[in-house]
Image 1 (spheres, one colour):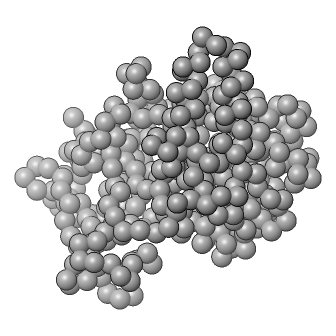
Image 2: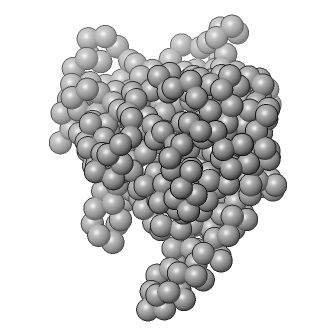
Image 3: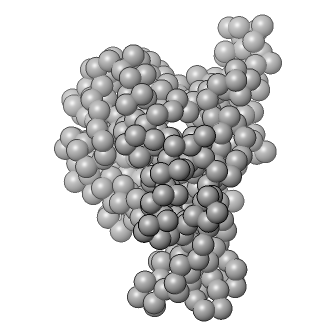
Length: 362
C-alpha cells in the first residue's frame, strides 16, 4: 500500500488535478513518503535487492575509467591546488569512491580535490558517509563552492520531474494527474495559449504526439554552466535519453527491477523519464561553454580503455572471466547500456580537450 497515494487522492478530491511534474516531484521527494526519502533504491535483481541498479554498481570498471578521466583532465587543466570534485545524485557513493580510488595514482589530485555531493536523501547520505567520510553535502547545486570544478552526474537528470504535453485538435494539452473512483488517473488540462507553449513543442508534431519538458533539469544545467563559466572546469553527464529532441512518452516506473504503473503506488517506485541531451547542451553553450558531440556510453567507455581494463581484471582473476566479460557487455554492448545511455560533456572555454568524446551519438 502507498500512504502517499491515499494522501494525494484526498488532496485531489478537494483541489482538482495537478500537473504531472508536480505529481512526480511529490512521489520522489515528499518529505515523509517520497521515494528518495524513505527507500533504499539500489540493488541487483539477482540479489533480490532494490528497484534498479546503475553502472557503478554493475562493475568497478565504470568508476575506475571515470576516475582516470577526471585525473587526466585535472592534470591537463594545470593541476589547480584546490578544486571541487562534485557528483550529483551519488547513490550509495560507489562511483565517487571508485573515482577517488582510481585517481589516487596521482597523489596531488587526491590532495587538491574537495569532494562535494549533491544529495537530498537522508538514507543515501548515510550510506555515502560510510564510503566518503570527508565529503561535503549539498541539497542543490547552488551552494557548490566557487572553485574550479569537475562534476559528474550519472543517472541524475532522468529522475528530475518532467511535464508532458499532448497535441490535440484543440492545441497542446498539459497532462495532469487526478483521482477517480479511489484511484489516480491521467487527465488532460485545458489547451495552452500560444505564449504558454513548451519550448520543445515540435513544429511538425502530429495529433496524439507527446512532448516532454523538464524545467528542473534546465534549472540545474543553468546553474552548473554559470559556475563552470565563472570558475572553470567541466561536467560529465551520463544518462539514458535522446541525443536529439523527439516526441514520445518516456515516463516510467520501476519497482523490484520490473516496470510498473507509475500511478499505482507513488513513493514506492522509482519514476524516471528520458533525458533531452540536446536541450542541456544548448543551455550550456548559451552560457558560453564548449561541448563536443553527444556520444554513446559504449563508445565513450571503449575509448577510455574499457576492453583493456576488462582484460587486465580477467588476467588477475581468471576464475571471474565470465562475470567480468558480462559486466563489460552490460556497460557497453549496443543491446544493453551501450547505445541507450548517452554522454554529454561541457567545459569552460579555457578547459583542455575532453578525452573519449570524439564520436557522436546515432
